[in-house]
Each structure stands twice: as structure tokens, then as C-alpha cells.
Length: 300
Ligand SMILES: [Zn+2]
Image (cartoon, rainbow, N blue to C red; front, side):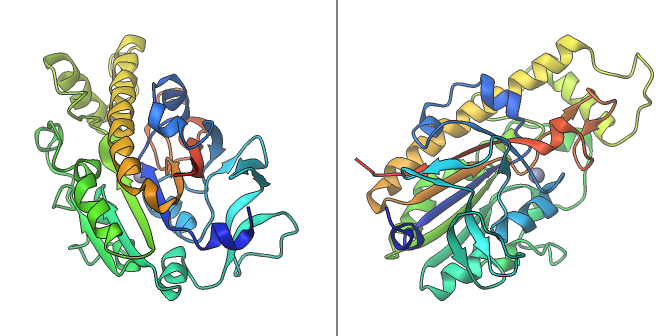
């Protein structure tokens, strides 16, 4: 495979928001496995904004095992910005321009984004990420305010970007070539999807988890979630990932005729008290270690 073959492909870039690497390693994800092996990688950011700023500049989470295989070739990185410092190692697609979206727009691609978590709420002028796209669809919660625990702990389907694969694929297929970015909130707290619905028990655990995220309870033993509680929450995230995998299978089927380059990763992980804290936005291995899959669809 030549550089130009890779560089001229359509692209699907997906972030599974907050998905932990160990959760991904324990999940059954047959559609993601079509792309290639699960890679353990390190994110440049500990929360959504910096992680995506790096990603949109071509700086994907870096596999800890070093170079990896893409389309039968070994590469150190998929994209490499001209703004990055000189680098001898092999990048599959060097690019100019400030962002991947700008680069692919210049090449005449349809560039489309979809989200996700509230950082992608395009109706809020405080959010810079959706404005990097010529077209952006936001399916998530409309308010930037955190709201009450009750308003955040809810069953979700229409708010999840991957519930809309038919619409996203149709928009892509209207164009000869496309760059599609999808931020998926299914693996973000409250982890609810059609496969991980609320129950009386997990509703109570989520209420407690939000209090820990918000710093509204102390660090006394009674306030911290127990081992079984954490396991139940991680199990919810695993089910949410498996639901996302099934929806990605639908998206891949619709788009594979265009033989796109596909990258799926988490933007950051999530800590559940391993280092004494909960949530993300701080450096801890459970936050910075993320899953990464990449590959080419429609290769026969
Ligand atoms: Zn995030």
C-alpha cells in the first residue's frame, strides 16, 4: 500500500468518551476487532478538551508498545502535522493546515462531526471544538450546567451519537470522499445505553459517583464506593462499550464500500478511587491509559 492510497481515503474517527483500557480489554467487541488488535495507548489529555485538541492536530493516543500495523505497513503514527517538531520516524499521512478537518476540507472532502458530551454542544458559543467543523451535529444534553443528579442520571438512547448511524452514513455517502468524526457519550458517566439501563441499584451508585465527581463528599471510608460498587459501575461501562461496538458494526457496514481508514479510541479514561480520586481531568494511569483500534474497512 502506498502513502497516497492511505492519504486519499475517506476517514472515520471515533472517540469513546471516558472508556478505560481495562474495560475495553474485558469487553466483547467483534466489530472493533475487524479493524485490528486492541492497542494500549496513552492520551495526550486528561479530559475532553485537550485530548480532542491534540487529536484534531493529528496527535492520537500513542500505543505504549511502539510502532503498529496499518494496512499491512508498520507506522509510528497515522497523521503528522507540519507544525510538529521534525521527526524521523514514519508517519503514514503527513499533513499541513491547523487541523485534520482543515486538511481534509482543503482536499475537497465532506467534513462532518457529531457529538456527544457537552464540550460538543454546538449551540453553546463557549465550546470551541464543534466550530472546528464545517458541519456538526450534536445529539447530547442541551445545557452546559451540570444540573441535578436526577437530571443527569437517566436512560439514554436518542442522546447517543451512535443511535444515529443511518443519518450519519447517509450524509457521508452523499459525498465522494468524507471525513467523519463521532464523539460517543455512551461510555461516559452515567454509562446508560439500551444495553445498560438504569436499575434501582445502579441509580443509587451513580448518584454517589456524581457526588464524588463533584467533590461534594469527603474521602472518609463511608463516602468512598466499595469494591463491588466499583465493579458494578465498570460493568455498566463495559456494557455501554459493547452497545457502541454493535452500533459501530452498523456504521462500518454502511460505509465499508468506500474503504475508509478508521480510528477508534478513548479521549481519556476514568479513575475509580485507585489513586484516591474519582473521575478524570487529573493525571493518573487509569485516566491517561486508553484503548485504540485502527484499520482499513472494505479490504476484502
Ligand atoms: Zn471526554
